[in-house]
Length: 145
Image (tube, rainbow, N blue to C red; front, side, top):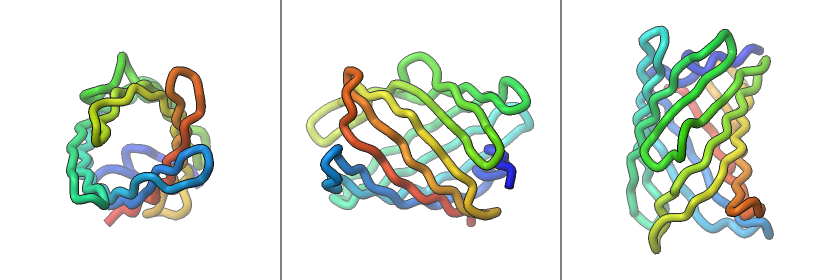
């Protein structure tokens, strides 16, 4: 399989996931509806988050294809630019972001890995650090509808 990020996220994608701390305790669960548009150069992802406590959030990513397998992107809260690379059935994405949390904002870095499981499914594991220290990870499944 070969992962093509634009093909995976163009259209309607639904995801479910959770954040767990370094001890394996699930701290937060989320459902996300994503609407992706691709114009041949820019992939725009409108992500609508609904957390298990009922709180919501929207993040809009603008991703630019910079090479045959490379990407860079921005979204509100992202510090600088995110960078990523497709490699076979895998996409690795790295960035720093001020994440909204129930009591404010938390600046973290993500080392985000996606694996193509089938034509319409991705598995995502994102390793999170704060000030260089592991704080946990996010596991998400994506399904293209």
